[in-house]
Image (cartoon, rainbow, N blue to C red):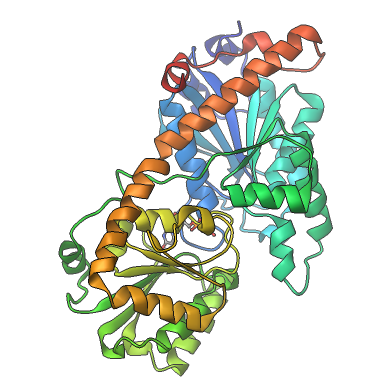
Length: 462
Ligand code: UDP
């Protein structure tokens, strides 16, 4: 058995010191790698290209570490003064690899730097022999497939977003579209397992991407200790919102695909007395990035519709304060044109706030219509207005929705349960790889005999 502590002594000078010291007390843990090319798990969430994927990778990583794994999460370094390594907990850290300029690069132009990402990752792979890599998004999947050409690694992939769906509603496909679609097919067919976060995503993969490859449905989760029901009056007084207003909430990035325009236009059509309704829009933006442009566009529409006095742009809000916003609201609206999962839906429901959402993607899985919220056709302004009115106009029904929503999340979408399912999947994949190794030994890096399956994980899931 190769112990991690033995490997420390042979460390190469290219690995920064904190990496080595972080290993010293973990000889019996199996190291695994999570790759998230553009979704930095250590970043502030809620700005340009920092949303659900960052939260997913970070939360899954930390929960897996609690289950007994040593988790290294790799992402691309986008700021020169960002730390190369961020230690989140004793056995979980983010490692930022230099691949191209250390600056923000939009996703559509990122692929050309992925070969450099692979090279930077290989330094760690050669040192720590991760037997399993969980990739996130198609570019990370490409990295995984490249690493697999030279190392004996098992691949798990979560898509987070599917080009095959996204491009259906985009008039001009970016130049990278064909490459993306090809890689999305390749990873589905070649990965040991694809994690679909909803049955709807599984169905889309089968109908739009490939009939081959193994898929398991494991949903996204939320931190139910942080997102939970608190008294509305308390939340409102802390945020200095009036107790007598009806609050309609949006939480998320400024991105045209999020459909904020639909929500603003729906608010202008509500039957509820406009003087009693406040639209609160939570989400960060940067005036130098595309999300800054989208925020300006939304602000202009708010102004044109005469809603400026009734609208609050709260800016980016951290997860420490977000439960207050969800609880203070009467309804949370998710008007996305396309939403692979939609963490905001389960965060809101966990806080007992019903959701009105587009009937798309994972929202059709997390929200039970008439029980935890309402689903309406995407971009249908009138349907959104009617649905919001229904919830604002019926306090008794809204209270029932509140109870059912929080109960649904508590039962199905806690991170620890989600991580236990992933941990079980990893163990099965690794066990299978050992069997294959015994039957047909390969001359690649990463001996099956070196795998240490966490006993804690074994007991928690068996
Ligand atoms: N978020 C946040 N602060 C903000 C806006 C959003 O922390 O100001 C978080 C939100 O709580 C959620 C994530 O960003 O965890 C958005 O995830 P979702 O899956 O809903 O959308 P995505 O950004 O992945 O499209």
